[in-house]
Length: 470
Ligand code: ATP
Ligand code: MG
Ligand code: MG
Ligand code: MG
Image 1 (cartoon, rainbow, N blue to C red):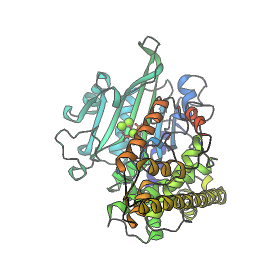
Image 2: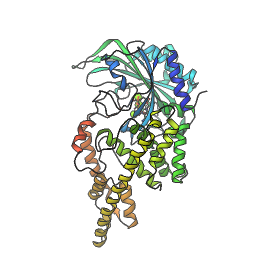
Image 3: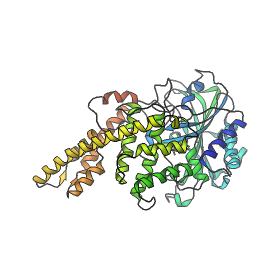
Image 4: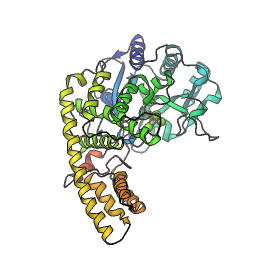
């Protein structure tokens, strides 16, 4: 059985090579000629011109292992067992060549024969109206009715306002009751970690017009995506993607740096996972040419570095540690992605400068907070207003938990309700400015547009496509 991250990557690409796919290396994380997308977030994203017909593909069948970043998942990182901001997506693609039947057949063959996953553990979903896919799974592959779930549009239909679109079918692995939420209605599609979505097959068979008609296209496409870390977790019987072979070694390094043992304290574990995830994203982003800034991709990078740095602090690590972790990332993933070895010194420099800068911002924030604390004590109060806490957060990149920590040392507390109100207001502003999340590869990502409003006087965090606490 192939269970290692590197083995599975190779196995997948070899498998589709045997099925006459052209295998090409991962594209950069930076989209080319695609203003609609901030960062590559799916295997199909760099292949869009082949799907739309704007360009002739070098082969009608292709397969890749694509570097992806999904900033929209940042809140899930460390909380769920299956979300990362940076991950590798395995995918096979058909540009008007094979369609549903082959896509399903091969996905099944790969899962059961190549990976050797027992059919008992596998579930599938189809779009509720896609009887064709249902019948292929049921009659052709032989999956029983009770293990095929019909899901609605939100889950299993991929579309934009207009243009190519179509139903999806997903493959889930049942990790067992111990990962479940315990609810009676828990089944594939549930938010908990029991049924893990590993592979999504998109059947792009319609062209949606302005009137909302779904017109069948003569040569439908196939676009699939399987999370490499997720399938590795399944194969290794690991609790989460952070407990798999290669990522696990990086996590171990974070453990060593902090002197904290993983698995003893849930809060610390969460911080360890966040650092592990973010340093991976950061290393790959800088390798592809992103530099920290207050806009667009640079802001994504800045936010990731600062958030990782902050969680490092929560773990008691001295400031200067992320740039050394980048070395570990390059050692672990450099064979598959030589760019992170070639550009290592540049990567480390960029991270170090940003870490140091954050240290300064934090120091400024501490000075300001101390002034407020003095004032509250003089006035015999015991609470810091939520507005001030939010200003510290928003302008000085000062995380709420840090504010709380410092206040507690002075027997003070913060008005968290007011803080959350401020946060909610800002979220609402960000949400309004955004048309869509950035989780769907074809979706229009408006982040680039709203960033321009943030140019002035911005020193710390704010919410663009990130939500919630840092
Ligand atoms: P989920 O519902 O679990 O958030 P998704 O439906 O958003 O996943 P897709 O857009 O269908 O994911 O992407 C294809 C595959 O990529 C998923 O089936 C999953 O295996 C993997 N994947 C998606 N998001 C992540 C992530 N944040 N971290 C790791 N793997 C991911
Ligand atoms: Mg999903
Ligand atoms: Mg999906
Ligand atoms: Mg998702």
